Image 1 (cartoon, chains in turn green, brown):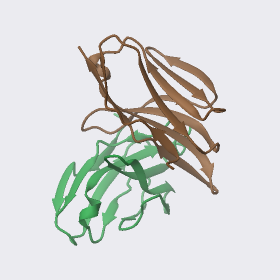
Image 2 (image 1 turned 135 degrees about the horizontal axis):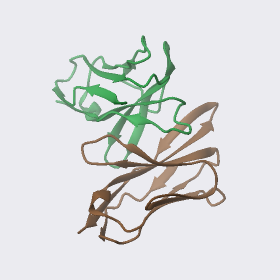
Image 3 (image 1 turned 90 degrees about the vertical axis):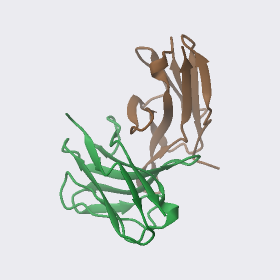
Length: 114
Length: 113
């Protein structure tokens, strides 16, 4: 089944404790992206990657890091999480940057930073 | 002013009603338009994709794009309880040299049996 898999689905952590949210896709898509979804603000892009070793900032990159060492994986790293990073996070992939085919989204990771 | 404006609702209608969901945008650089459906505790899934102005139909769903007015709509005919979800408009355009995807806030829709 073609899908984007995120782990974990739920995570509660403490301020300052480094964490990684994994994302993997099995569709051989070149384009991958991370979003956060907050009430009243909708989906906002954090980082995106157009291919292996090519990443760029989205609209809200502060406090996040990413890497794209393999085509299928695009982990999101929070080096020192803060409470304002409490949110619902989605990973998405696309064969053409969203053109014509849209994006396939993962099921989400609900992160709480206390 | 937000680049994409979408009434967050919530919107509640009886089963069988025609539903109209709308988004407006301010930047004429947006050229590709989409509607996503998001069920509770799930990621968004692509519902409709449109490039040009005009109407596109897929079963009970019709998308409408009016580039001159910077306005897009999604119509749902014969609405069903299974259509209850949050609907997000999204659009892609080349802005400041980069291809950018922007989502609306999403409209929460409930279809009552």
